[in-house]
Length: 160
Image (cartoon, rainbow, N blue to C red; front, side, top):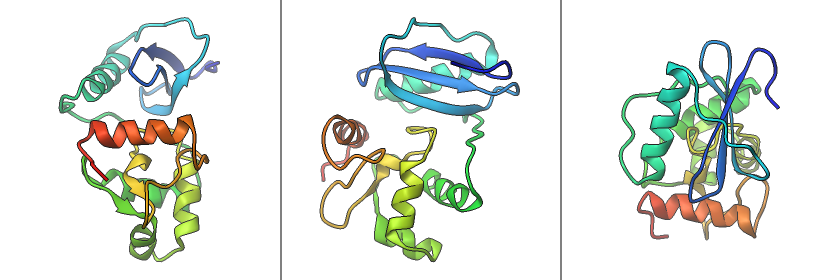
């Protein structure tokens, strides 16, 4: 559960309950998708309302308005990869290999940074695919997590 310096709220979605954690400044530090056995806690406060409105618009298929503050914890390298992910427009994908070339690293390193992304959707790791196929998601190569990735990509109009 959220610590003393964070705020937490949940919103229902087609992917299950999305749980969002904010730091004391209102920046998103974590987004968990498909949270089980969660009591729905509505957003409280202007920062939480802004993040919830962004997510609801995105999940409804609308273009979210504005930007939300993000504060993912991670290494300097992970932060570089996550910044690159945020530059991939909705409906487009990059393959691990090409993103690795752009960042002067290996596809495996890019994949590991994607795997440890604490804020999926807002840091769109789902937009990175394998050269031949959809690739993994959140450390899984098949199953429900890859199904979420497919849903997110199709939701954005990708027909891979």
